[in-house]
Image (cartoon, rainbow, N blue to C red; front, side):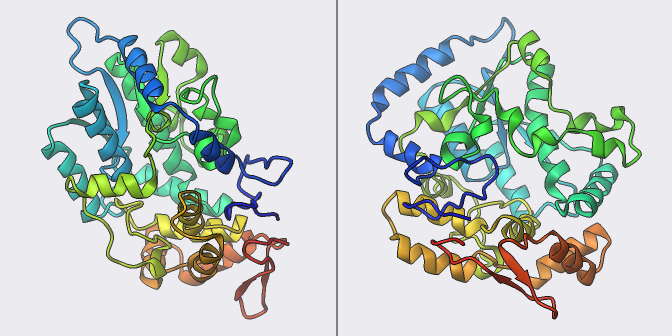
Length: 375
């Protein structure tokens, strides 16, 4: 395990490759941004949007996948109020047992801001079984969830005959998932190759479901994208001030409700991420034990690049909070999956990366690596 020399990105992030001088892709991209002509990019966006005119009788210019949170709220308002186009918002809704009241309120806020929203709600029973099986097979109950989340947007674009999909950040440039890089910095049609989407449906079919029952989890094939002339565009590529904190600040000023539970319970430094449900912090905790980094690392890396904290200050916060957890959230998560808390920790210990951690006889898990240094 090695760390980026500038930020705290470890080389254990799936699909990331450091440069020869030990710099992560996201830091190299951030440095390149300092020389960008943002007016030129704005003009590229204007030209791009003009290439996707509405068909006769069509009301919406494009589609945005939304949750009601910081990124989707900012995107929707920017496109409508700055670019003068009318987006259709598409939200994949969590089942009642998972969605938070905060999440419902934030989605309602988007509707109250004047947007049309289409809600996709996969069958709750299938959703639960797939989450249970995802945890049992991969110690990752979000594998199916993310497939449905990403698949719902292009599926609805095809149904509505809308060719342009606007997405937020480019995971290849801004996070380092290099398999998602497209032909240009704003081309999102390689999103299908991200770590989760590339896992396929076979394991779901092995759960006993017919393919017709899994339609909500099927990402359209490349041939379907070409047939319907679908194009995903990363909107964040065009915005010089696109960042976690900036998006949150902008969206909070436009009515979204943020978390109040604290970083020590969620690993969320500012309480602005995964607002629509409380299982994501558990997934982040499991990710930490698999790859050696959690939610705080993602926050800190951006803050270091923006010069708001030093690398040394970041190390202290990562050491303190990257394995953040809340016993109530873990208990709620286990109740939903119909497992005991002891069973949960048993699975987590088995899935723990023993190259990075040592699992003691009493079940406690301890880092082998030194944050900011590695192994």
